[in-house]
Image (cartoon, rainbow, N blue to C red; front, side, top):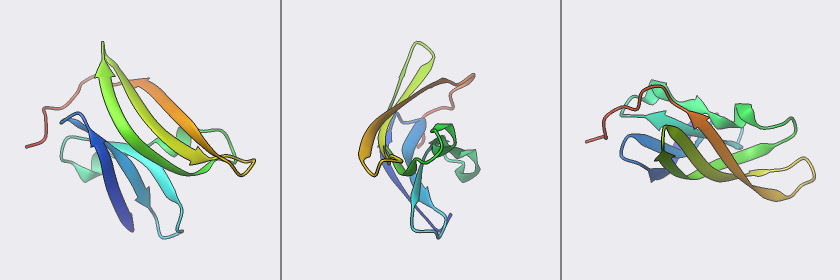
Length: 94
């Protein structure tokens, strides 16, 4: 990634975005302290969505909730909620 920024964390899962030099961010989460653990959440949006950012992350009963926003195909910024499961959550970052 050319640039990345974090906005929220559970201590074990970190939410933010990366930029790959195109100028448009892609929302994602990282697990623990490993930069290679990045999961690109923009990959889970419908075609035409762009400039996504993850602002907050929470875990409840084995589900991971990530709140953010993305530019829609209609040119609006829309709120996005990604919901998923992780099999194993890493220990909190130190």
